[in-house]
Length: 223
Image (tube, rainbow, N blue to C red; front, side):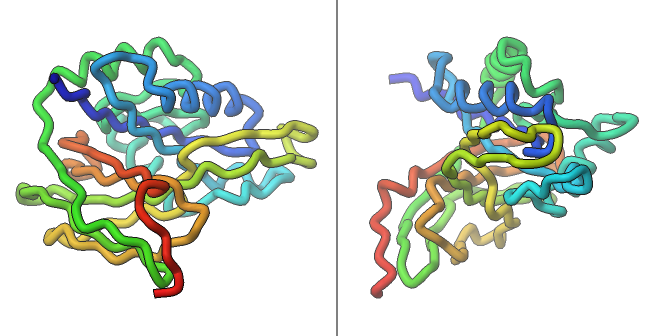
């Protein structure tokens, strides 16, 4: 059986942005794996520069804003914006264009990918441990993202005042791993997925990616 090509979809979004909810819905649709032969690995990355306009996004992070700004420089943008999607580190576009995102993913899925395998996953004592089996080329970074599927958020202020917003795969941690591939990360019951990926120099193309559904990994905080 032919394995699906794993394509990383990064959405830069904010609960303070009135244009973002349609893109949040597109990400949720892609998370349902609508295209045969492609495994969409989705990450919702909440930036913090909308927080000054009346509502502080509880999932926002300055580190994720920095990641978006790095992409902005790489793609020679005049400025960053929301909602923005980056497809497999190789193309960027407005995040509510689901058809174009899927078309780009299909194009990139034909490229060779570096295989990554997750082994020895365990969750205990508030830690998520495991090993990424991969050969990492020189100057290539190995990342791990821990993400959650939170309950809907009622937003009382800002551009989305009065709306209830729903998100999938909200990044709670994004860390660069040691080249050995071993990891020992803070964990919590809200974490639902782990995505690991190889990224080229200067936050370049994604060279390979995989994921684990943490609901399938026994959670035991008593050990």
